[in-house]
Length: 144
Image (cartoon, rainbow, N blue to C red):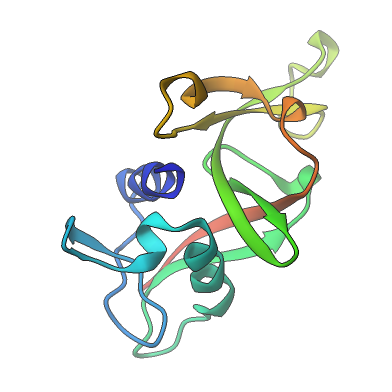
């Protein structure tokens, strides 16, 4: 459910669905969707392997670091090389003195996440409250 939520956020933000190549990311219906749309680990494989070409379209993203994170980027919890959870970055968390450039001077970020458990559906929760086995994903946009 978490990756379905973040996939919907990416699509709403203008990322084009990807129906081509060995790695795909799309949703037409619950019975017609790519595994990467709803599975954290399949999504991880998709974004790492979707490098774009004349025939490959869809999400353009790469593994990054905390300091590069911005609104609309993602964070995955990764353990032993497998992603288990995906979260959407929704806000910078910063001291008042940094208000001229909060993304540059952030010390934490707010995340939104969805889950099958109502208690685990969270909005603008500090990332620091989550486990530290994180992989940061910077979203560049879509390959045309």
